[in-house]
Amino acid sequence: MGNNIRKIWPPVAVMLFLLLSWQAVVVVFDIRPFVLPSPYVIMMQAITDASPLLDHTLATLGVTLLGFTAGAAAGFVLAALLHLIPGAKSGFYPLLVLTQNVPIMALGPLLVLWFGFGILPRVILIIIVCFFPIAVAMLTGLMQSDPKLVTYMRMIGATKRQQFWRLELPNSIPYLFSGLKIAASYSVISAIYAESIGASKGLGYYMLLSRNGFETAKIFCAIAIIIFISLIIFGAISLAERLFLRGRTPSKGG
Image 1 (cartoon, rainbow, N blue to C red):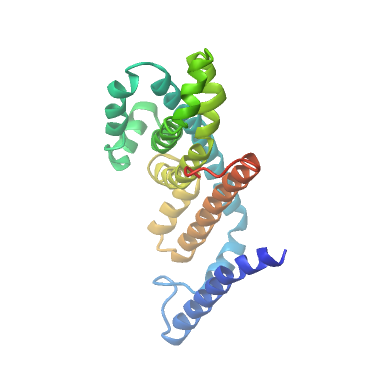
Image 2 (cartoon, rainbow, N blue to C red):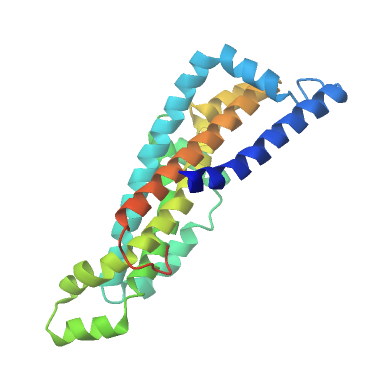
């Protein structure tokens, strides 16, 4: 318990210092709220707007988790297929990299044009953004198995499938979690962007309306919630990683 407190208090202390400094700067220099609202003004705005903020937050969280889950599944399956099918990696990996060179600012409007203003284009955008780091991380892990163990399994007559399930897949799990952590932050950012161009609900849409109305405090409320959502998802993945890998030999992929 004491160790946990010692780990937590430094970032908490820094955050409190920054918030107090922010409040002091706004008060001392009499900065107008529409330029830079103080933390107190932002907090009061969040309380006033609690109900709509909750609705928009739930909308963003829902589409984020849906897209992230689908993207993780797609990345997992793709990495396994590229690893198991002879010649697949050399043929399809360049195309995999190519998909990440298309800016989401160009892809987002196209998805809205093709699939309308519903939830589908938002989910597809998140999937496209998330599956790449997961696939690459897991594919790297699948190729990092101990050569001696691989040779031993071949000597005892293990099939490629047995080698995959009993050696390569377990070895790739720490790498998979690394990819999931990276994709988690991408998923939230992608959801916010998608909501700003093709949604009627969500924090991205809320920020767009607030920007058009020069309601800066509302924008900061949304930013704070976005950061909180990202931290929660990242923390959940980190907790799952610790629980899943407890007792395992540390891997350089984690």
